[in-house]
Image (cartoon, rainbow, N blue to C red; front, side, top):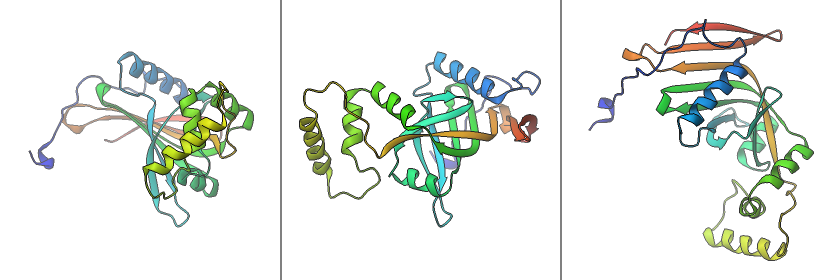
Length: 212
């Protein structure tokens, strides 16, 4: 089959601006719970788009770990490519796609680092293997081969042998994205999809319908 011939007709649901919450964070939480209930695979997986120092877009999949004070929170190695880019230019975008529900959510905003106390608390909640991985990987750095990671993981295991939990590495932390625009997309027949967007203006959210 040719790529140009691949098509899917969307018809599960509709989306009306009169039926959504006045607050997009509340609306997002509703959709997230519906995605979880529908057993969408990794419903918290999102594309994080950042901008390089020379203005090129950069994107990858990360996991949403919470919504705190209306902000979208995720964790990473602060010395990774995304961490360095966010520290230079905090503007970013998040995209969720839940094909089982024929839904997409786009979020634009500004990222700031979470506090050390918040990052430490979340790090201590992670499985020990994930903690070891955070110490092991020089994320986004070029390495010769896989054996380097295996050796470093062994060294970390030996270093913290007997300790149930590892301390948080200095280079590991989190970001919280304060949204200024959130769009909810619901697939509809004939590509005439429903798009409802919220814009944050002077501290208040306004709701609009966009053409598909």
